[in-house]
Length: 349
Image (cartoon, rainbow, N blue to C red):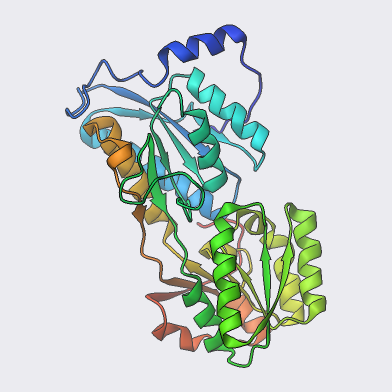
C-alpha cells in the first residue's frame, strides 16, 4: 500500500466533474440498508494528520480490519490508492480533501482532530460520509451536535482522555510535587479541555504550574528547555500530536533533569516519555473500520450513528526512562485498568 503526498493541483475541469458525482462510486451496486452485492468496490479515503507511532497504529488497524471485512463480506474496500498523509500542514490537508472529492470516494476517514475538522468542512455541501478516528473531544472541536446523535454526515471514534486519572498517577508516584509543567500546542483543539482540566487539578491541590507551548519541533524543544530551567517536578502533555512528533527529540532533556513526562498516549512512552496513558489505538482503529463498514455496506446514517469512545485506562511506562530517573511506578496498578511496560523505539512492532 502506498502513501501519497500531494503532487499536483486539480484542474478546473476536474473540480467541475467532482461536484456532479462525489461519493457515489458504490451506490449503484448496493442500496442503503441492504447487504452489498458480492464484488462491490468501495473507495475509502484515509487521511492521516502526521506520522507518529499512535497514528500509524490506527491507520494500520483500519486497513487490516477493512481488508478482513472485505474478504468476509465478498466486497472490496479500496484504500490503497486513496491514502494520504497531510504532514501536519493545513494547506496540504485542504488539497487532499479536494483530491478525495474529485476521486469520487465513498467515505473519508480522517485520523486526528485537525484532519477531521478539515474533512468536515470540505464535505458540508457534498455530504460524503466522514468517519473520524482519534478525535479527543468531538464536541469542543465542533464536529458533532452530540456524541449520541452527531447530526450530519460525520461520526467516528474518540480517544477521549481522562486527565484527572493521569494526574492521580503523577501524584501517586511523587506526592511531593510542587510544580507541574504543561507542555502542548495551544493551536490543537485536542489539548484545550485536557490542559484546562490539568490546571483545575493543580489549583485544587495548591500546586503551581508552568505553561510552555510550541507549534513545531524547534519551538517544542525550546519549550522543553524552558520547563527544565523552571525546575518543574513533572510535566504533563495531553493527546497532542505536535508534542508527540517531537518526543524523540526532547525525552533525553527530561531524563537528564530527572523530570518524568506524563502524556496522553502510549506512543509518547514508546518514544521515551516516562508514562503514556489512554486507549488501545489498535482497538480504536479497528472500531473505526467497523463503523465505515456499517455505513457503506449496511447503509447506517452517520447523523444518527453515535460516536464511539474507548476504554481509557491503560498506563504504559517506559522502563528505561523509569530506571534512568529512578521513579517507582508500582502504585499505578491500583489506579488504572492495566500497566504495560515498554522500551524506547521509534515505531511499534
